[in-house]
Length: 207
Image 1 (cartoon, rainbow, N blue to C red):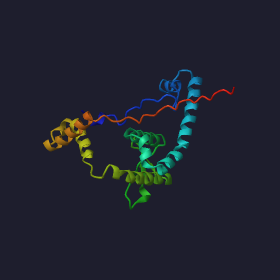
Image 2 (cartoon, helix red, strand yellow; image 1 turned 120 degrees about the vertical axis):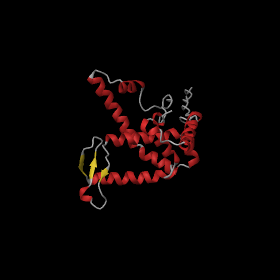
Image 3 (cartoon, rainbow, N blue to C red; image 1 turned 120 degrees about the horizontal axis):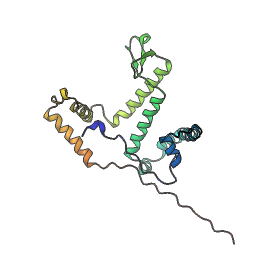
Image 4 (spheres, rainbow, N blue to C red; image 1 turned 60 degrees about the vertical axis):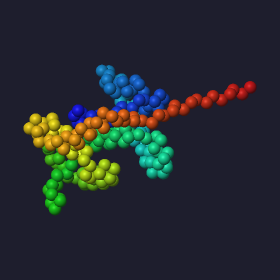
């Protein structure tokens, strides 16, 4: 089992009447319609829904800050954490976040480096982005740990797929690899909390 191929998150089972997109919107998003008008109309509807969801994030943050943890926990699962991190990664890719390279004592030489290796002069926005992301990573790291042995296990799994490095894995290393694989085989990750669809209440007609 190559740990690199393990799914980071598992698609949720959709709850009726609680999905952001309709079935037809979802289908047209996946299978882009050849008709330009249909495609554009669907894209506009989806963008409006995305915008609305993003604008509601302030309220989500408010809920997470003030709703008691025991109540929050009833609506959350591990998979939700992985989904949100993956969405953040997609946002960063779309907005073209890029790392800054250079020496700390030579800020005049700082550059941002794209995935293709092209370097550009650093801007104030790039510095703000890097500082903010670093602060967020530092806030998250206590929940993973700076010296988590799982980090080494993932690197060992990568080494296994490289013939010239595979033989460098020791018997002790393999114990860690096997323990992680055993956990992945045995653990049934909870996908999401069960959400009850609100029942309609019908008022009696006046006699």
